[in-house]
Length: 297
Image (tube, rainbow, N blue to C red):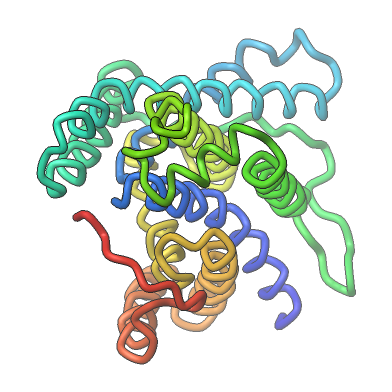
């Protein structure tokens, strides 16, 4: 049971890591927590569901079908996040609006996207089709769900791709420069609008992948994006603005959640998680990574 819970927790934490890293990335560039990510995640989860229904029967290989669904969700997440940046954040950034408006604007966009999904797909519950015939495989003496293994493997792959982009490409170099001061990168010949849009698109693509995994683990419903709170908690535990800390915090959160569900049930588990987070912040408010930052809102 102990090993089973640890493996399940790490798998769940790897999905939270995708959300938390998205928070950390945008926090680094724009210095606020982007809660529109929840709405983006909801829309991409439904986009992946629509793609799976449309392509099921047209693609024979389950692995190829699953890969195409993930790619469709990631692409839709990137496009929607770029639209959110253009509609909600660009004018605020150019007019140097009060910091609180970034927070309000991101919350508004998240609610707007969720309501658009409700109008389009109603409040009914939907379930992803079963992609793989084998549901679990034995590993280290315990049975591990195939979806959990896929979540862990693809989440790690996505994070490695993100690190490659940030530290081995010119775009990544520009985004890291924007993390220091997004308004002065133009003096170095960079386009701040392009860099901010790229950061949002990367965050949206990560949200798309996590949206599919959350949709597979749970049922699809318009408020699925509220799971983004788990990613925010993970980023707080890891240290706001730290990508590596976000990953550590997410894995820790996933393991804690699985153990609390096992000990006190799914209903009480969120209560204990928030109690642990509050206790942790009292002891180490800067988070695991120890980064001292000041949020816009």
